[in-house]
Amino acid sequence: MKKILLGVVAVLILIQLVPVDRDNPESDPANEISANADVKQILNKACYDCHSNQTKWPAYSYIAPVSWVITNHVKDGRKHLNFSEWASYSEKRKNKKLEEIVEETAEGEMPLTSYVLGHPAAKLSSHEFDQLKQWANSMKTASQQPAIGENESEQEERHE
Image 1 (spheres, rainbow, N blue to C red):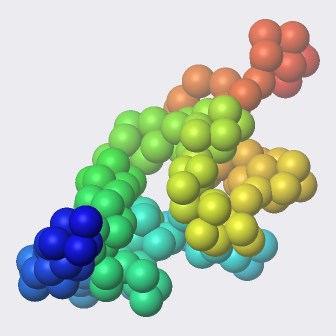
Image 2 (spheres, rainbow, N blue to C red):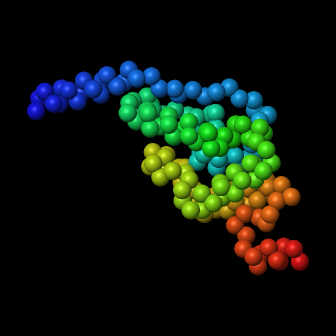
Image 3 (tube, one colour):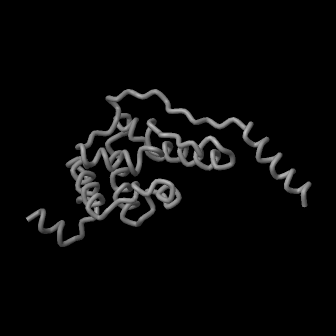
């Protein structure tokens, strides 16, 4: 039993030597998404650590194997949506991402449960969700379909 425990400890020590990329790439502030102060605060607390180039790397993100999971989440999050590179997206992609923001937060898929466990303040209240939804709808270009989350009767009322 003692040898197994020593082996586990040795492995845990050795995996700390595996390099992990915890960078925050340089980005032009002019490319960042625009939002009012309230929405910006919501995005900062619930989204930016995984969906921007402004990740705040907590102390536990330096300890393997947790570091591997966190860096993979950030890499994947930035690949799917990066608020620091918003201006580089096409209008079509921006509108799609705005729809996804509303859908995934409404369904409780974002922020990730694992993130909220470590960052309880990231959990969105219904008021914050409503602010985010209203902002996302206001950001959609006029040429796009009805507002996100709007049902058919609301669409008809808006067009009358």
